[in-house]
Structures are given as structure tokens and as C-alpha cells.
Image (cartoon, rainbow, N blue to C red; front, side, top):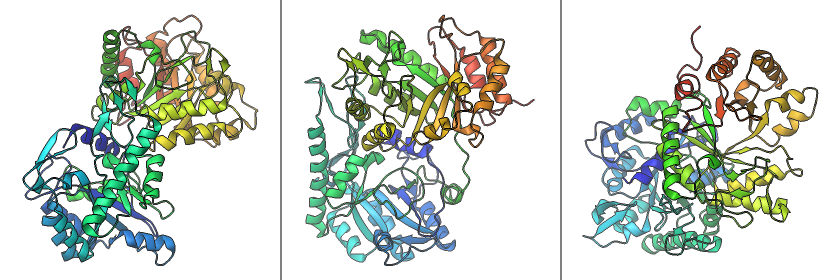
Amino acid sequence: MNKLFCYTVLIFLLISLPVKAAKNEFISLCYHDIVEGLTDKLDVDQMAVGTDNLIAQFSWLKKHNYNVISLQDIVDAKSGKKPLPEKAVLITFDDGYLSVYKYLYPLLKMYDYTAVVAVVGKWLSYKPGETVTYGDHDEKPRDFFLSWEQLREMQGSGHIEIASHSFDLHHGELGNPQGNVQPATTTRIYSKKTGQYETDQEYFNRIKNDLKANSDLIEKHTGVRPRSMVWPYGAHSKQTNKISEDLDMPITLTLKAGRNTLVDLSEIRRILVMSNPTLSDFVYEIEEENPQETIVRAVRISLDDIYDKDPKKFNQNFDRLLDRIKDMSINTVYISAFSDLDNDGYAEALYFPNKYLPVRGDILNRVSWQIETRAGNSNHINVHMVMPITSFKNQHGLLSEHDIIEIYGDVAKFSYTEGLLFVDENGYGSEGFVKKLVDQVKYYRSRVEKTALLLSDQKVIDAVGQADFWPKLQRDYDGFVINVDRLNQSSEKHLESLLQALPKEKKLKNFVFELQTVDKKTGAKIPEDILKSGIDLLQERKVIQLSHFPDDVPGNHPPLELIKSKISIRDFPFEER
């Protein structure tokens, strides 16, 4: 299995939450290949499951009264014809391997189960004896995949429904000038020859034509047009969902984990069955109802600190940052996507393509993708973009809200992100403006689910007594990052005032406390002992979500050992006392 696929599905696996289906809810299982005799997790293809383990999983589902359902059952339940049974499970298999016919099909008949099988049209268009190039580098003989005759037989039995997995989107495309290859479905292709990205219309046509071609091909060979789309690598957006819906595939399946309701079938979540799990691991994924909550341990970085117009120097700076993030053992990185060299609080240049502000360097996509795929070790790194709300200006003055909305669309089109951190001391725009910005990003990046606002500690303290301060903010943001600036001899008193100023109905887990590591007025580094005492004071008061800013890579400030001992991810975030 190619590296792009493994990187992408690992992301979804690491952020997955175990789920259990309730009435009129269902869970969906995502399988890929089946390998006879596979007894451990060391198969070259980490997406494979062994035949014995698959049988054990099906038997466990049957014994524990799980009800395997079809897409038709879901459609009928949504239309009110018949409710879903308790403990409903949808079984899916991606990629269309021969093992589906050889091993799965007999099991479906034996257990009287159904499954959705998603096929890639191009892979099935090779002639017998030819070699299929799939993913980006892998090659397999044509008979490693299903034949149309086998698909027609399984479809005719009623045990299989065929879904589209694209005609030729199951691979990576060049996503930036630096050479990163990213999922074809959500990537604006960069051309080395022209130095340009594909236009919005070119991107739209490419996705639409591909999906239509596969639907036409499936209908030609089976007589039935698919009504569901399974996104390669789970990469999709509201835009691609709309394209799929317009092509009569309103049901789409993702690699996000979670339970499903009947409200929205355009993004069915699935539990990825990966690395040939033991039965106990499989059961845990199915039945665990109280997963451990994610604790944010983060750093905020400014691209102004690492950018250099000399690509060689930039790469050196970025490689050092990447290694440092890896050594930090954190799980979240906030990346400032704009340039503010004069520190006036206004974005005057950006680090991604757009038509309103100068591009200081087209590096945001490179940085976000490399951090996502290389810096996490065994931990998933959540990459969040830091952007102003209204503070954008060019040579003509402040940008309009219309222009800013388009800039937010561009940051989503041309970079990878899972969340947004808003930072703006100059205003939050008109009523509903922040929601428009969030919706614009989510239209192009479906995985953006969390938003936060950066607040100064003094702003929080000064808001005491303002009855509408928190209610207004909570309508627009999921959480808050509080920059803790006054770390000195009066730290304890200041932190007490800060914690007392927080809304009583909100738990501390809704706040990330960001330690300012440099004096904002003088630029002097905050000494290590003061930073350490500040963290200790916060942790003594049960603060567990921590970050810091800025991070000085060449100067090792704050010291890496301090970060590793105080801010990194640990099983027990509090020191024993």
C-alpha cells in the first residue's frame, strides 16, 4: 500500500473515537483486503485483515445481536418506511480486490449479511495479464482485482451493492511547488511546467468528469448506476459532496470515525479496520463508549520566523523546526498563515496563493502537510491555521468582508488544516461574519471541525462584569486559547485573577493556556525558571491544556527539556505531589 494512503488513513485512525450504535443510528465498518492465513499485524499491506479474524468478527457480531444492514435499509429508514434495527452495522469494502469474491462473498452468504463494495474504474479497465498501477507507486497484476463478471454475480445475489471509488482519483497529485503529493480529490494540482495551480473551474471539471466516468462505467458493466460514493483516502469536502449528489450519488462514505444518524447521509462515518486487529481490539472499537478525551498540548508558530526567500535556507529552517516539533511530543500545532513583519496586528502578506494580498512565500501547504505527515511520531498532529478576522490590508487599505471571505476560501483550497484559530484585536466583523468564514473553510476542508479564538489574559480579566462577553463569543467559537503574558514575580496573583475571570459554567478543558515565552514589549526571553513556575501554577489549579508562543528554534527557547517535561503529551498530565 502506498505511503500517501497509509499517511492519510493513519490520520483518521488516530483521531477516531470508538462508537456504539443506538436506535435509528448505525455504525459502519471499513475493510479493504482479506489475506488467508494472516495471523499478525505485520503484513506488508496494513489495510488487510486475515480470514480467521474476519470470521471471528462476523461471528461476534452475530452472537452479540448486531444487525448488518444495507444501504437500502438506511434509505428506507430515512424516508420513514422502516426504522433501523438496534445495533445496526453497515459493512463496506474498499478498492475492489479479488479477495472480496474469494473470501467475503461466501461469508456474506453464510451469515446472510450484505456489504458495500467500492471499485476504482481505472483499475478494472486493465486487460487480463496487464499490470495495474494503483496508488502512486504500487503495482499488481490485473487478476488481483475483481472482474466485472464477478461483480455482476455478487450484485445479482443481493449480498453486494457496488459503490463508486472514483475512476482515477485513488492517487496523489502535486500539491505545491516543493513537491508534496496529496490526495487527488481535495488537491489543487500544481504544475511545475507553468508554475500555476489549476483553476477553480479546472478542478471542478476534473472531479465531476472523473465521478461521472466511473458511474457510466459501472452502469455499462452491471446495468445499475451507483448511488453512493466512497472517497479515496477519505479525502472529500462539501464541494465534492455536492458534485457527487448532482451525479445521483447523494450518499458518500468517509474515513471519519463516529456513529451515524439518518439526518445526513452525505458523510457517513466509518470505523477503519486496520492492521488485522485481534477480536478484543475489534470489540473495543465497536463497543467502547467512554473514550479518553484528547488533551491539547501545542505550540503556535509564525511562518515569519522560518521563511527565507532562499529556498535552501528556508528548508534548513523548516527541517530544524520539524525535528523540534517531533521532539516536543505534542499533538497540536497552530500555524500563522499570514505575515505581519511590523507587528501592527494586520496581515499585509500571506503564505498561500490568493488574489488580494502579496504572497510572501507559497509555503503554507508544504509546512502544514509535512507537520501532519512527518512530525507526529506515533501521535497524530492536529494542524490549525491562525488567521485574523478583519485585520487584512493592502496598498489600498483594509479589505472588505467579501474579500476576506474569499481569502478564507483560498487558505482552505491551498493548504491542509483541521481547525481554525482566530486572532484579532481590531474587531470581529459584522454579526455572523465569523460563521461565514468558518463555513467557507469547511466547504473546501471537511475535516475542519474545531474553531477557537485567541484572547489575551488581560482581555479576559477586563471582561469581568461584562454580562454579554462570553455568551457572544461562545456563539462563534468552540473554544478559546488564552495567551498568558504576565509571568513574573506576581504570576500567582495574576493567574488567580485570570482563572476567576473565566465563565463558571465552562470547564477548564474548553481553554488552552498559551505561555508567552518572550516579553512583548522588550523582546527579551522569559527565563526558564519563570516559565516553569507558571506551568506549575497552572497545573496545580488543574489546567491541563497547554501551549506556548513564540518558539525560538535556533535559540532553543523555551528549552526543549522544559517542553518535554511540562507540555508534551503524557499519560498522566499532573506530576505526583
